Length: 421
Image (cartoon, rainbow, N blue to C red):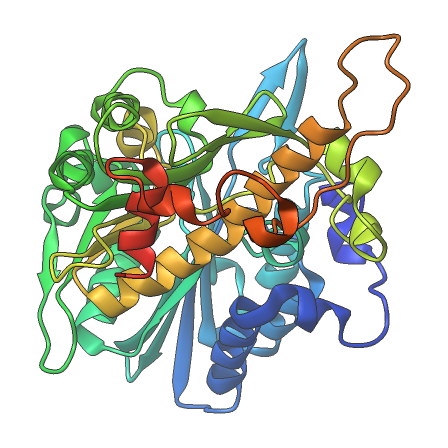
């Protein structure tokens, strides 16, 4: 992938199916959504974009011509007198906007950053002006979003959910500066449809940040079995009800497992209450090919999820997801969406993704620790990581599985939660 994000639209992709493979299910969902719209001349598309440097996505949007409306982030920052960000003329986002103005018409392309960022990543399909399907989540329309980062995307093939996103788009397209004053931003919206779990939606920016964050905090506080989470910018939140609740979670008798970024590394919050840091320099030096080359392009974080799963093994299971960073400043200033779904099957799907990712990172911390020398003079190679054997073979005092049956131990909690035995 391009080393510089602004070079993405002119970057020559590798041949073969490497991008479909790396983008996995989110890639399939996204491009199938676009192709379905392109192939139906009676359908129009509305798009919210934040990071936007994936050239194949831009080509698909250009193919829609005047059937497209798009809002692209134009936020900028100034550091040491130098302006950078999506709003500068040379950015990939500005280049994409200029190209789409030619294909869709200038009146169909808008730029905004609300009060800080236009942070939605959303597609809305309409037939006869009526929204009927929507895609949202944390996945940016970029090389890193699809091919490097851990992300999630959700498609709602539901007119009621799509109508809410459509109304948000219309309000932002007409006047983003007053969006926080609309009813769309002032409350949670419940969609209840037959044969579909309850879906709650909250849209920002809004003045009262607890409006969106209190349900997240409350679900974590009330969890009686487990909390699994991947919150990309947890350590950039500052004080607030969600960050405070995550801090309290570490001392509670529920199974919790999570990951967040911290100072160029990933912080893995392990079920036993300990914390491990996964340094990306270490990963770069030790990952085998082709993964070593594939993941290393560009700059930015690698875990970009924003989700929290509570009590996935119980009927009261909930999952929070979307584009929101779950921070007070983001809810106050960014254009974002936060989704709460009350459904055990969907929560379990997120729990599986969480465990897949966390266990891998946990293993990396073990690898890194195993390779550290005890002292500068220690030249011995670390012992290899091996599977443990029964005591009849290992001649140890107990079998490797016996700690899982010790009353009150963390391993007993693991066994009961995941095996139920």
